[in-house]
Every structure is written in structure tokens, then in C-alpha cells.
Image (tube, rainbow, N blue to C red; front, side, top):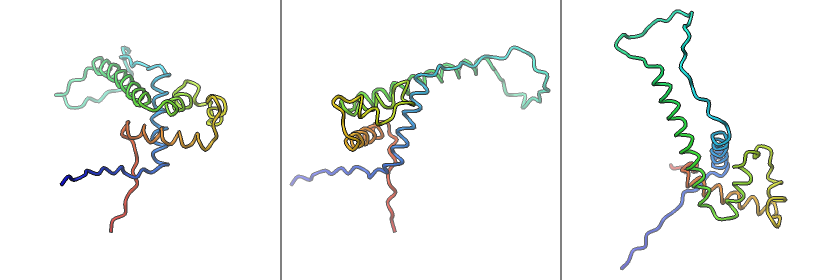
Length: 155
């Protein structure tokens, strides 16, 4: 006799998951469209007194700054690539919605109304738009591992 495996998806908190996905997409826009400001080593003497810590510690300001600059740029690049790959896996309409509404440089000024009335050809209704957006958020949350599950009450 064969046993059938069952797989149950967790129940997701819609509002918290939407906020998490929108937060990640905002972070994506910041990383993608704002230039990274590299730190630079200070070469000027400071007039403030410096009280040194333990003498067995070495401090290399230049290497710390160089490491930070390289690591932050790599982190930003990897983050953007990860989000772009997750969005690329979405179905066509969901991908179009996310790209037009959340991933452009002007997305701070684009409203949902503008997207479902003017970007979609032919235009779609607000209800259809919200259904497509929720499906896209659901898939993105699972792909990016940021889905917020509902707490189950156990007695």
C-alpha cells in the first residue's frame, strides 16, 4: 500500500508579509539607485585626546575601511541580484506589476491606480490588481524567505 505524502503551506499573515516584501523592495531601490558612498581613511590629526584601550589590540583603520567598502558593495550587489532573480521567477503579469510599481527609480511617485489604469494594456480593475499583487507578494515572500506566518494558538 502506498502512502501519500502531504505538504501543507503555512498560513501567512497578509499585512505583515506585505510590509516585509515592500520593505525589501524599498531596500532594493535604495541599493540599486543610490550611489554607495565609500568610507575614506582620516589622514588629519585630531585635537581630541585619545585614551587607548588594551595595548595587545592592533587597529588598522585603512584595512578596516577597505574591508567595509568591498563587503558593503558585494552585499548590495548580491542583494539586488537575489531580488531580481526572485522577481524574474514570477509569472508574467505579477512580474510586470512588481517591476512597474516597486522596482523603478520613480516608484515612490507611482500609485497603484497609475499602474492598473495606465500601465496594464488593457487596463485592469482594482480588485484584479490587488489579487495579482497579493499573489506576487506571496511568491516573493516565500522566495526571499521573509514570509510572516500567523501564530497558531496552542493550549
